[in-house]
Image 1 (cartoon, rainbow, N blue to C red):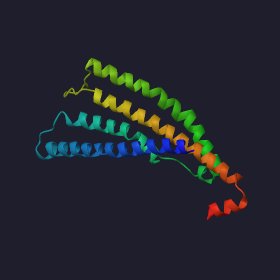
Image 2 (image 1 turned 180 degrees about the horizontal axis):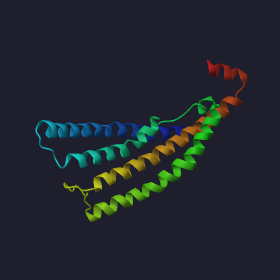
Image 3 (image 1 turned 45 degrees about the vertical axis):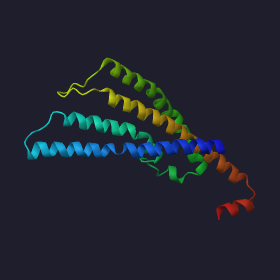
Image 4 (image 1 turned 135 degrees about the vertical axis):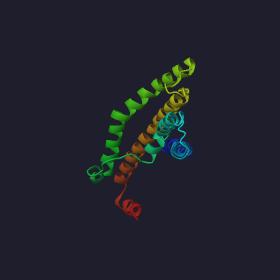
Length: 183
């Protein structure tokens, strides 16, 4: 169990650290929006580069913080029935849903995003906007975000397995030990 806890700790620490760094992109988006508002509304000089840059930064932001959001349980979940289930059932349901929905998606799309980035980078692909910014930085962020999501998925699966093992151990413990653990 020490190995499992070590793997979980390393993955969570890295994703927590990177998530905090990537969250700074939201300030970049805010700066571009403020720049556009000032240029358009106050100086009557709209810029051709602000709209595509806002879209690109927002896409990069969402892709890069995906694993951080998963780790922090920041996504919407309806837990009305789930919360009433015993912990062992909750752990099992998490594993089942991760294995049937998240793992196939994340582990299928990650290599696709690498190819998506590589094709864009090698061909010098540019966006269709007037500004014609390169698209490869955004596509690289898709790959990095999906890779980090895959790694965080491993951590989340290990947490569920650890929960099952600990719940099983607690059930097998003699009644005196259970009372001590509850206190």
